[in-house]
Image (cartoon, rainbow, N blue to C red; front, side, top):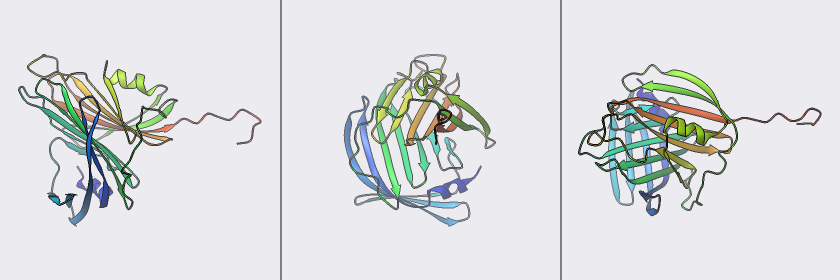
Length: 252
């Protein structure tokens, strides 16, 4: 385990929190400033400012439901589906001086109740106005490498894969999953309804989040829960778009 992965977040991040309803309709947005600094070895401070409001946390250790990856990407959420209780997960990516996060919430019946996207920049604020995004730019073939952490450990497994159709691949991980795109080039893939303990015995599910960080680089997180509804592992993929070789005889 390494709290030092938080070093990727050091500095001041300025951006926008945008709230959406369960159908992806924008409800509102507010400016934010979030700063990270290292107070001592393995001790980090986070300060969130929203207008006149200010919140502060000091990290000495990581919560049971939280995993950071070496690049600063993370997955955080409840570790167990519980009866008669809501559910929430936050996952996010860091790419150079840009950060993209999404919070998703569900009610005790397993229905999505809303989303919050957080898009931030370090050194330069993220833009206030963003155009709609329908998933364009994700077609084609992608070459990826992955790291997978078990929920109860810090020994990752690595892997690689070639994906010719991202949407088909998402559906193999979350069959019949809902795909919802958000401005800022974030895409969430999740079950139409979580398998809450009050509804089903088999509670296996996966929650996915993707981000087209650049036209040539796509990041993807997948948080998995087992048949008891217990968090089991989380994977991060970094994909590069596969380049098509130029025909013979044509200068590159």
